[in-house]
Image 1 (cartoon, one colour):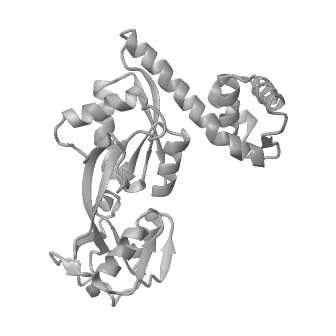
Image 2: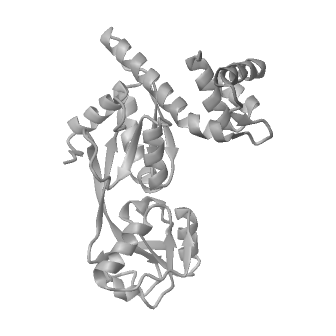
Image 3: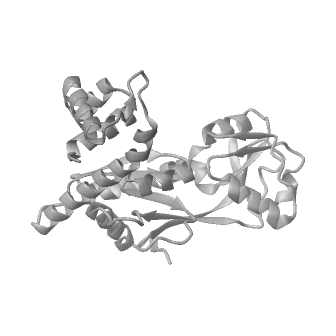
Length: 295
């Protein structure tokens, strides 16, 4: 079976951009070249990998082979970067970093500034997703690094970026808004709005710790939508304190008792060597002292 990195890159781009034209633009190729590259790859595997109707989607075989294509491309990027480093070249190129929404807003701006100042030729491309999506993207090779929430077990070499706690978010005119801290039971008089974007497991655990039933009136995927509903007076919610950067002036966070914390760590994949640029930014964060190595 004969295939090239170029063909695998075309296959991944077509899927990610849901079409041949958009993939051609992203790759800087003609649409005809993109079509020919995929056709050559499909001849190698003796089957179609995508359905051509827009939006383009994988065939069943394409779904099976796509993670392997991503992992192969990720390994090739790492190989190239490691070889360049051996020759004394400065860190350069791009890496993909997956992050959950609260980390993207609460942590990444400062980290990106630090990385860019130190490694100006390394382009860090961000991918925002739910906690489980972030972990899946990292191990599949879709990204080279990720910020994970409470990974278990802790990946070798992971760096502890931050610890925050779950707090109640209420309107600024809510009777509890001025309290230094409140019991979870104090929220029972208000409808509970829950987010399914990775935080729900922790919120359920918080209820279990206090022996209170977990009965949300609404379950919303997007954290921004959840905050808009709280702002509209439709209920209260429980979110990580890093979400403070997402709040409008009409919302406020109130610490909860008991205190339930989560850890956010920067890590590379567990199933293949780390991209050298991921190791470089991890080491830079550790050297800066404000961030502490995990475990």
